[in-house]
Amino acid sequence: MATTAPILPVIRPITDLRTHLNDVCGQATDTQEPIVLTKNGVSAYVLMDSHAYDAMRRADRYNLALREAEIEQRYNPEPLSAEAADERMGEIFQLWGIDYA
Image 1 (cartoon, rainbow, N blue to C red):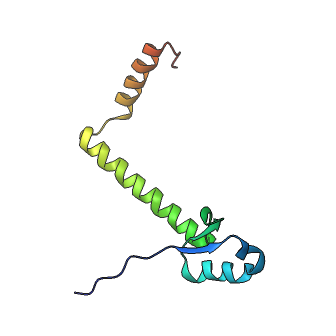
Image 2 (image 1 turned 120 degrees about the vertical axis):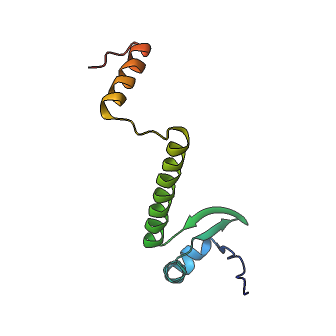
């Protein structure tokens, strides 16, 4: 069975933005991976293709929604009607002293 090596981050000095901007942007587009920009040898910024960023954010939202559903299923396995939810929220707001209409 073949295993893949872990992907190492692309690291470039921040001065590459000034001297090789098109190359850096092309690399971000080609690899669809973030590029870590360093300043004095320390990571300072991350440059990423906008399509890769959007895909990463969509995946994050999807994973968060799945996690929330798992938590909801684990701690509240029974479905809650809208009326029951309104009643519970009314009780909570009343405890907090908030007028709930």
